[in-house]
Structure formats: C-alpha cells, structure tokens
Length: 190
Figure 1: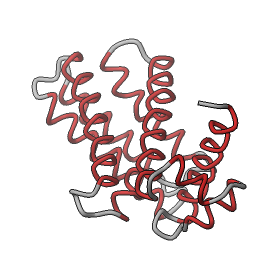
Figure 2: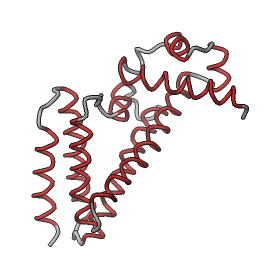
Figure 3: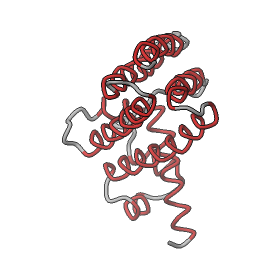
Figure 4: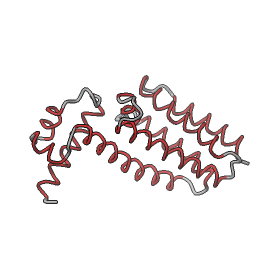
C-alpha cells in the first residue's frame, strides 16, 4: 500500500475514533469524518466501502489496541492466574479513573446498533465473548470449580462498572467492582 494511501486511511480511522467516541457513531456523519481527516469522500470510500465498513474496522482496531494494552498491564501487575483475575480490576479501575475515559466503544456501539444480526453489534459482542473467555481461562487455571460462572459474574461487574462510570463520572463504580470481585474470587478459589 503506498504511503500516501496508508496515511489517508490512518487519518480517516483517527478522525472516526475521535468523533465516534465524543459524538456517537450514528450522530457522526461522513462529512464530519472527511473534514476532520482532511480528506475527501472519494478517499474515504476508496478505503472503506461504507460507513458500516469504517465502523467495523474502527471497532476491530479498538479490539486490537485494547488487548495489546490490557494484557500487558495484567502481566506487569500479576504472575498467578488468581492474581491476574484481581489485577483485571486494578487495570479496570485505572481506566475508569482516566480523565479521558468515554465509556467502552463496544458497549456504546452495541447500544447504537441493538440488532444482534448487525455487523457492528456482532463485532461488539465478539469482543465481550473474547473477554469472558479470557476470564474463564484464568478462573480455570486458578482452580475455580465453575470457571464459566465465576467469569460471568466478574464480567457483569466489569461491564456494569463501565456503564455506571459513564453515566456518572467519579461514581466509585470501579472500586465497588473490585471489592465485589475480591469477594467472589475468594469464595470461588481456595
């Protein structure tokens, strides 16, 4: 891919990321994206066949960014599977406390595209299936007798705290989720 093309594509994705996270996906028009990216509609449609294709790529990029960042943070903070389960909520709390926190792009996208057959919703749901699988694997490795159940409970805390913090900043939802996670993990893993 020529450098000029790669730069235009990257500018479009960066513009979409900024606008989708501040204005919402449906509220952000193609004109806003091309203006912010300092490009043209023709260039946008050269790289993305539709707004939906752009949204899906944006979410796939966010997925890759999240996993790279998240796993690195967990690995830095903990060694054992049980400690990694707890560290998830430390990293989670730091993310929620970040002044730039604007909610979860996957929760936001699935709320804007509630039809479960829609590609945007499917990408969002896939992210949380992957997240739950990650938690299930850690719970199993830590010795939880019912790792799927523990992972489901921890995911509910994780996702609920995100929504609570998005609705009311500095709500303490991250701290509450961590305390509840500690209790669940202590009662599930010896």
